[in-house]
Image (cartoon, rainbow, N blue to C red; front, side, top):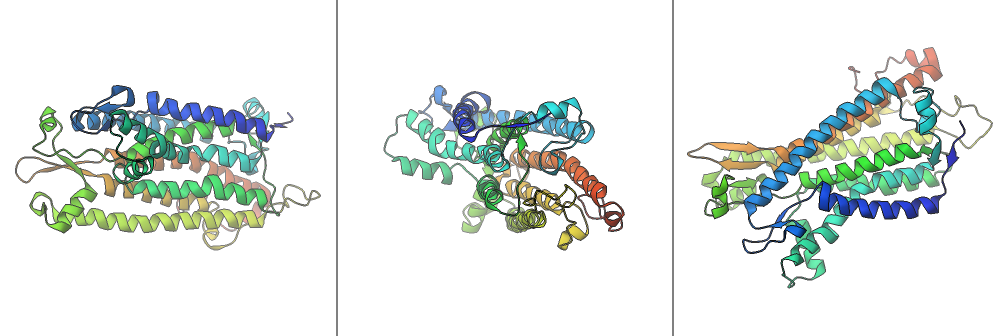
Length: 404
């Protein structure tokens, strides 16, 4: 079946309308975030509640449900892409796996740079929507107009978001803006068009995951023992960075296990380094692969358009870019865990750790595994089909060195 490429301008118009409505619907209905601005300030229409306890409990309930959904999506995605069909884009655009389903998926397409931008940018838009509209609107709903719009944006970032979200934004700034621009302007590479259903499904996922990771890095409200709302059954919980600050200033050193707090901070530093190492390796591998493929000569057959990658980690696996992305998102999950872990002090010297936000970040790592392991297998098989015994003699694994 011959594919038909969609025109860019109509796609952008429809996308702008659809994404605007989706951002609003996600915030208002699907994945609300609840705010607390003081005991006498509440506006349920803007999700502003009257106690810190209520805000924390409602946000916990939303986050718990999202984690369940994310893990379920991981199972479904892995099952479909491992056993049923190969996502028909990139080097697998002409794959026959999936039969009539594949033919239907590839009926309508768009350019790869446009697809990459549209499907990845919702993650950034979720963050921008929160700091630029959702938080300022909620704050002003309680009647406090003493802050300028710029000050409210600053408060939305500094008082409500953890640093782990910055790593998430770094990745998607590149993936949604820089990478599409590069593949659009790189002369030696003319990428395959991307089917419309692939772009739509990826866009929907990034809308979902962007909101999930925003909530995973949202600051829970601190409840002190003197807070009457704490008596509702939500004891004192303070995120690990607040505990670290108190520990350094020796204000509440007798209330925390200093060694545990220092360990969390060291974990934050170490896994931040690993995140950027994984991101750098992922990008280096992606751009290296682009440099190998020459699609400008129309006389070349499909086999001659590809070369066997031989640089660095490619000596061990067919897809080191995916392996690096695994490291990247696992490190991100550990950073979120280290910066959002909340500690409940019980009677005596007993403490209880709450790590739901870290679990939400970890669910993204699990989904990444579920999405990329099947694709790595297909990449590996692609090399074996195209280069035969030459590639077999290299004895590479698909994605994890010496394992798979």
